[in-house]
Image (cartoon, rainbow over all chains, first blue to last red; front, side, top):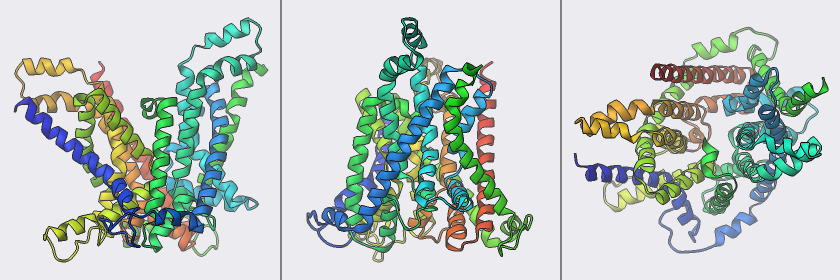
Amino acid sequence: MSKSSGFSVLQALTFAVLLFMALPNLIILAVSFNPEATLAFPPTGISLDWYLNVFRTPSFAAGLQQSVFLASISSAVSLVFGVLAALAIVRFRFFGRQAINALVMAPLFVPEVVMGIAMLLWANAVTAISNTTTLVILHCLIVLPYVVRLVVANLQGIDPNLESAAMLLGARPMQAFLRITMPIIGKGLLGAAVFAVVMSFHNFTATMFLVGSRPTLPVAAYQYIRTENDPTVAALSTMMMLAGILAVYLMERWIGLERLVR
Amino acid sequence: MIARLVPYFLVAPALLLIAVLLTGLSSVLGWSFQSSAGDGAAGLVQYANLATNESYRHFFTYSLWLAAISTFVALLLGFPVAYYMEINASPSQRKWIFAGLLAMFLSDYVLKMFGLILILGRSGLVNRLAMWLGVTDAPFKLMYNEFGVLVGLVSGILPYMILSLNGVIARLDKRLHEAASVLGAPPWRIFLLITLPLCVPGILAGTMLSFLLSLNSFVTPMLLGGGRVDMIAVLIFDQAINLANLPLGSAAAGVLFLISGAVILLLNGLGDRYQKRFQR
């Protein structure tokens, strides 16, 4: 076997697989401009009507509002909780450290449906709690492990002697943390926040157990796909894809993409 | 004394959150021992029901089967991509593929399945193309069945599989290949005896992640299976939400949790043994 033929077969295979992965997105993009009220491909012309229709569909507006609310609250809360936990895990040696580290990562190992039903039963038992509060807790649980992992990786990369030096020169511990460590890990925190927002925004399965009468945006899209048959969801998807590309760009700038998956 | 408590104060909020999850999980366990009629504890009735009722059992065996097939296909399709991007691609090509994979990893799952509906549906891309080419007169049935669900599962797990594989492939020592090649080994032997064994940790990691994601999949069987393809998550959702049979739903969730745990332990154990064997 010559080296060049092996190379081209591999290349062809790679691009076929990448095309298979990208094709759904490309079709969505094409269909979103279809002037007719069908999901047929190829489109018969170009129109932006469905983009306007996204904003005229009440369930999408309500869904967007609910999703933005959940994503911002839960990523803010889990960022604060996550940074505190990560500080303890990286900077201190204490009894039960390994066990606590494992516990914080636990939500990653619970299947999403199980997490959904668990939170549903928890909310039933607590009774005096609104659906939205339970959803906030659920989303915090879902993003917490990712935040802790990213922040731990960030903190491990900096020299604790910097803080010690600041304290030696008279800074109080809190001051040393806020003035020295925070600026260094700041970008990493921003990246973690974007990642948390994305994970919360797209969560579907566990959320589905708790949405009740206030669907999030993915749930509203899901319900629309199951009942309607026009390109409005394609237009919505295209807009969400643009937001996704922006998120990837921001994370590349703030934490580096390789850091995210290792 | 107080200084020694500082780390515990720092982790307390996160642990409080985890405690909520643990409470929820224990109520799942508690509910699974109740009777469906709601008249109190019933021991293992729900579990017995799941084990003996043919149609319930099918949800579990069929999900495991679909997860296994989709993971295997994703491994076959993902390996060349991971290999190409780490070994053959130029740095800028690699960066673009990587960014694309991450964009897919982060894109909305529901919308990805919607895109597949546009490809596989009655008047979707594939059927339009097939009819235009004159391959068929009547549209193929490509979704609301096993095939559609498998395509959806593979498409969902591929980014995870590739991102698990490319780490080990990037760390391959090229000198080993050169040595084998100088000693006269044909490329297929180099691949089977050197490349593949060195990639086993990544293959195990990708397999674990993909298998669990497929096994727990809910959106794919609902949208591409039309709710007619028996997967565990659909059973749990139907029982817990649509039929308000929390005890049976909880028992099914308990079994799914156990299966997932077993898969994690099994594949992690295999990985550890493998590493020990080669790190002497």
